[in-house]
Length: 314
Image (cartoon, rainbow, N blue to C red; front, side):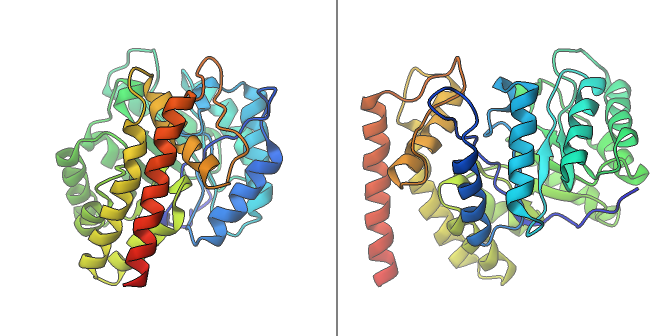
């Protein structure tokens, strides 16, 4: 089986841009890949929650995967989200990703199905046996409604089933326990944190990398944060984290909307302000933020830019 390049650093979970007809905007997606790679990120993660994978058809997923892999051209690893109801359906997505040239696949615990820990472990075993690609578990209980016990995670790591885990649980205690268990086992797993606002703390604790949705908007800020952490400059890392926290206020601009609209919708609205997207369109049935909320996002971004200019001049 293929041995992975160990994942580390900043790995943005990429947004999916759409054209006016609801199709994948291939040209914009290609430009986004080039911007992210040029900013110094260490990998790319298309077709995750931030990529609105749950709303995409199989054809659209394949299109996104192929465009990102082709545009990346081996400059950084591409790990592709293969999120579906059951192992057979995940395997179909994973085989598509492998044919496209992906460097790894990301899968959650089973969705909708109600499985125990043993069945969940077998879910991951089946996926890994079906494709010769590193498998990263995606721990996102707010969406999958189930977690894999630490003991099972480490067993799967020992078996070579899992190469890493992306933790979006929000459970900092659980992540700390996982860090300790992984270290005690010789660190077989690459541990990636999806916690947008605690990246400095997660790196200090021993995380290998970061997968924050906000890095679509400011990848360079997260790269600077990671570099400061690698150098042991925790004051600078905290400074960058606070600066990113100011920008993260965009996700609180829209009240009364779904989590996807408030979060991913805000990221896209901010990217429109920065000239990175022609449109903040979302996958149906989610709609983009309305004019009032887009203006609120714009004001936050403009204020954030002004403060950043002052800070850089000091």
